[in-house]
Amino acid sequence: MLFLSISEAQSQKLFSEEWFAAKKEKKAKKEAEGRLMITPLAGPAYTPELEFTIAAGVMTSFKTDRADTVIQRSSMPIMFGASSTGAIFFNSKLTSFWKEDKLRIYSDFNFKDMPDHYWGVGYDEARYTDKSDSSTAYNRLWWQIYPKFLWQFKPSYFIGTVVDVNYTKGTDASIGVASDEYYQDFNGNPFNAGIGIIAQFDNRDIPVNAYKGVFVEGMAVWYGEYLGGENEYAIYGADIRKYWKVKKEGRTLALQGRGRFGVGDVPYGEMSQLGTPFDLRGYTWGRYRNNTMLYGITEYRHMFYKSDGNISKHGVVGWVGAGTIGEDVSQFEEYLPNFGIGYRLEVQPRMNLRLDFGIGTETTGFYFNFNEAF
Image 1 (tube, rainbow, N blue to C red):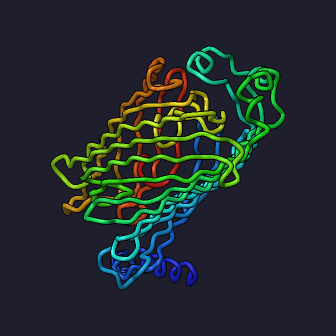
Image 2 (image 1 turned 30 degrees about the vertical axis):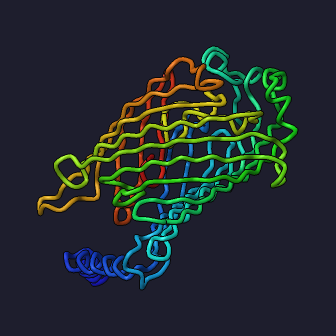
């Protein structure tokens, strides 16, 4: 009985209002001082390409210079996991601010080793080729290192360089995959390396979770043997986003239009692909691919408020979108519709855990990730 009474007292002390207030104050102090914050999370997901997945990760955020009062907190979510298909994956996405925001460094790191499916190139191949062990199955090893270095030469205007080093290698190809001309031409040359230029206008309040502002990006990257790559091609990109506050902070209407345009002998693994966790969520990543893609998304993000008038940590989103692929801009094919809903949990200030359920043409997907899709 004595043991129980002590445990109850400790429990009441541990979860008292004073304990929660002290914990909140400690967290706010760490944020204000720019110190490293780490939040671990884990959960299930189901995507068309990976099927049932268990993912674990950490959200890290920090200030690159704690004495710098101009820069925002940088962030680097890290995610890794395994799926019921036998796939393993790792990804992280750095968003960092340096030298009074004169320098920004963004970088993506991706790795996947997975049983996969390849339908071929173009809308008809993706839409009408039956998925099977004999027609579309193969194993894919893919990794990518993709940093961007941007210098702010006047308020909200940035220019810089981008580097892309990537590798896609297929093995254990089914008869259908092995007979595909693109697979035959490029699978023996899996390594690509390119460098290019990038320009941005960005006046968003918080890039990883904007409540307001505009983002415009233009980019050109050239790939070839000069950096050790095995294929020669170019990728041009344009990305336009706009965010409006809807009556209250945390109630946001977000729009994105993005195009990616490949020129030259683009390898099958580096063609523009719809259906990632950052565009038309709900489609199989890699099913719809061609040299060029274009898509648009409208998303409403709604954070709930507490009774005291402050924003809570919980929110919901809903989106509608559509996209298309083509050999070039004059040959776009059928448009793919997309819509979905999601839940948001703020795990660090203005940094969310993202749970999305997306619906496409005859496919659905449930995504577990950090930060907004765009």
